[in-house]
Length: 359
Image (cartoon, rainbow, N blue to C red; front, side, top):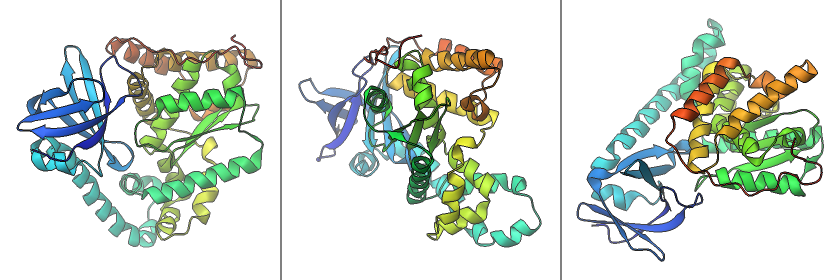
């Protein structure tokens, strides 16, 4: 039995998208979930599944089924020890996954020391597996420095919007998509081109032209969820490493972020691979489902971009870095149709404010 209750966030199936504070204790072979104003829940350990998730595996997701729906608990890794001590078997799979990543990181770090010699006779593309392993364990502090560099460069390139209806709408949508314990920033740049990008460290930049072109808050939410997935999957960091070279990451690991910041400033122009886009789309659908936001907004916005491309004869910048195709749209449509049915909760933003009329 764990005597000290462990804090968590409870997301009941079909409940509030923002979740509820909860306290967890083990009683014998049963997990007790206590929330304010509601009877305690008793869940058998045999019914539970545990998964390490989030940035740097900093959270645990405990879930269990009830009919066709699933309930979810989010627990910070820093406080999960009492639960793990009582029921180690439940957490064993996630711990093994984290340990494998740690072993790969130590190997990658050893190779990184010898990197200048390795690079003499090999192209960067040949080192992609090594790049991926090192990127997977780059410290969060390095990612934060990259995000700060991107944001500083963005501010120098043009005005930022820090108040008003569009800014408030962006923050509202961003909060709805942010999981417990995540530190995400959503910034609005006054720019005429339809674009959005995310930097390592959780910095997401959206152009005002994108907000004006979107037909609903759900379309913006789809774009944000896709960009956040790129960050969570570290696609942005991988692109920077592959473009700048592993020497830049090596310098960053020793505290020199100058070169890394220069390359990070070009993040909005870097293209993602087809596999990376598919992974980000999948991650976006999962995040939208958790937030109970209609996932069709993501598909609708890419179709909007295709229409803009046809009308103007030139693709918006977002299409040049996140190419949309008939194949991708078909996959998204099929993936959305295959997900369990749910009842989306409207975001609750009037998209007809002055300057942003519904099309």
